[in-house]
Image 1 (tube, one colour):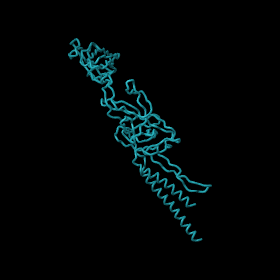
Image 2 (tube, rainbow, N blue to C red):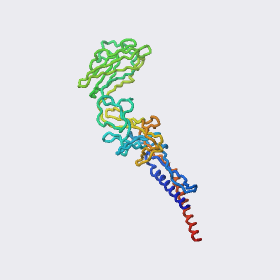
Image 3 (cartoon, rainbow, N blue to C red):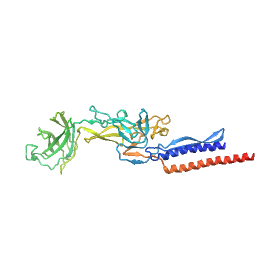
Image 4 (cartoon, rainbow, N blue to C red):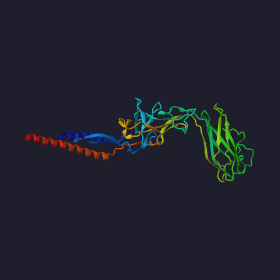
Length: 402
């Protein structure tokens, strides 16, 4: 019986050594989670029968260190969760290794070619992603690799200070070519439906105390008349924000432009005339130049025209019992009855951790602790072999006595 007990001890130590050696071998593997072999005593009819390696525990809840790569498509989950990816067989597995890229077909893939899973962007009638529209359909993440069409400008936001120190121009009537007939001018760049740039110039003329007229010139043409009147109270604030729409027809065959001009926040204080905001929407056509992943999982595409669009959202999967996941090759896990089904959400929502962009999670293996465990396993192995050796000496002495 002593032989069998010692043999069971050696087998259990061998199982522990396999776990320890695997941990040490993967100390430099991104997203790796260390494991521990658990022992339990064996009995038969209340008689000691040795020891066995009864189970293996995963340290899934212990995070690894942050390694800053600076690469836009690298991401690390800070907290709970896994990246769901789909392999060529159509099976969804889960990983903590956030090394992603975009393949030639526009699919977001990990370093092993598996397709990342997430939420598509919600698109408007023109196929443009709608900001703040929520999450789209769940599935393979894909980025449009062709051109994005030009977007005509529809809004012009102007915010500034029209100095209260202005005096009413003595020269009249207004003439855009005569600076003596107006107090200030501001030029904005807008786009038509073909992506061609146009200029819109605003000319401000003080007409009385707390009152200024605005004239609008499209591509240098003479204004048709007063475009808007801005009235300010004694505190220098607009008494009402005027509703202004500048209508213009480009000569290049593009669709007519209807530009809404918003003066919200414009003031009339003494001092310098300033422009705080002079922003228009719209842009020229552009081609995809790069992609990056944001903290909330947003997949941001950058185009040659300087435009950035959120074209999808990377998903994070959480489980009721993460330790119940089944480890598989390629630093991944598969779900099991013990882990429960995957619960998908965007990073930072619910129990899912946020992402650290441009970073990867290092292995959570504690090399010092593993080496101590290795020495302990060695002593246990030697002790069990000593039991076998001693038992053999006893048996030989017994046989000689007989």
